Length: 211
Image (cartoon, rainbow, N blue to C red; front, side):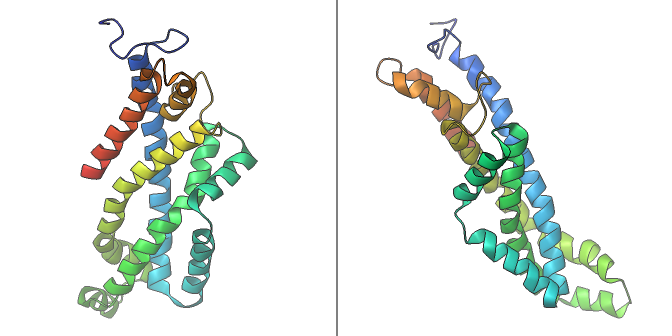
């Protein structure tokens, strides 16, 4: 009991050790799959909102097309096309998740570009790029940062869901969703195999939500 506080799985592997190692996998992918969409979506949203016109209309049509499909359906389709690897999962989530950040930042930029400090920067003859990235962006990025915390939770859930369906991390790599999937057939006799990885997902989700 003391040597295996969370028990062992059907192969005799320590659940606590695998949960801890699974945290490295899920949190690493979770951060990367939020960082890249955050950067891409913020830059695209800032350019779209500040430039307006044809560029804004074109970018927003792309955003509408991505939003027209369910999040998980697009990710499953992309991962199924590219293959179930960590890199491909990151690419799939990045291709879908950037639109949320773009829409948030664009909305903030549409309001900020009418502010007096922006009008003053234009009167001083500053370039469009300087106004966008040195004056407007620092004042509109906060909502995107706040959203990124909740987006990490959604990303971790997406990763674990893909692994549970067999489209995510492949065995023997310890990953929370994969551990739940491997333990579900033993749920009556060895409930701890699936329960503790599931609790780890819940704790991580609560932690990032509070953050």
